[in-house]
Amino acid sequence: MYQDVWVKGRRIIKGERDCEGRYAAIRHELRRLGFPGKNGDRSFTVLDIGAASGYFSFRLAEEFNARVTMIESSPAIVKWWKKNDNPNVALIRRAVTARELLEMAKRERYDVVLALSVLHHFPDFERAVLAMFRLGRVVFIEPPAQEEAEGGYQGHRATAILQLLVNRPHRVLTHTPNLRGLGKRPLMVFGADAGHGRGAKPPDNAPTP
Image (cartoon, rainbow, N blue to C red; front, top):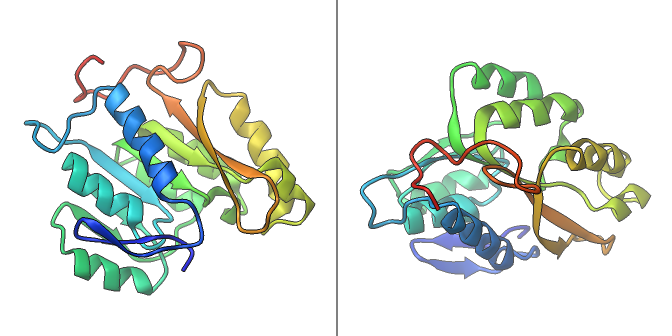
């Protein structure tokens, strides 16, 4: 199992990647930015691109009362979606292209976009990045580690992806190992006050931190 499996408030399967550490970093950042919690009178929207088993989606829906849309092509996601039975989580069960994400961005806007360890799967990753920033006000991206250029999955894209991202105002929240022992992947956040005090303002429905 690549990712931890979360069902109704608890982890039932331990995955190969560090999910708890990454979730803790995302949760801390959302709270720092003033996103309302579960008991607040407001919620916010999340788009989880490449949701895997839905670990991050289900936890955000539970803890923050967020309204989450997952995009995932794996058939297994249907099982975990049904087991969680959370009305705040919607599922788009198919792979999407960068072009489709750009088309989506013409119609939709989310408070938060998650793109964790998925960007290197897009052949046209430049347009995928553009779409992610059009789709989200605050964007969390976990790109490949630089060392993955030496033999990671789709590693030939690693350097170009990192160069594309580091030129934007951002903060690195944490690093976690990939599965091939090739460095550690950075978890980057863009938007709000990410990156040396520059960037977009907090989401419209978030109170001032």
